[in-house]
Image 1 (cartoon, rainbow, N blue to C red):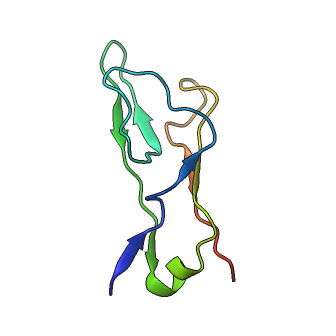
Image 2: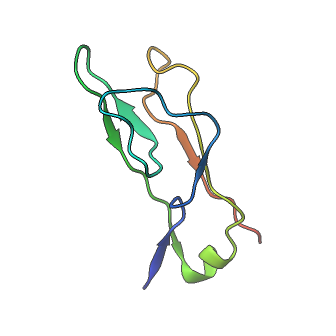
Length: 83
């Protein structure tokens, strides 16, 4: 069954943090930065069937306002569908 990455064109609601190494150019939703070490990023995917991809309204990632001490190292990723 062919699948489409629903987050491939996701828009971020605020800029990614300035890090070394820089955040990847592709949408990401998980950042882990150990003390005194470089940040690690993981790309997230929401896979859609062809039928669901045709109904995709948009895609986005809500960046956290704080990057430490807020209880999570994940940003929210979303893909609403027009039903």
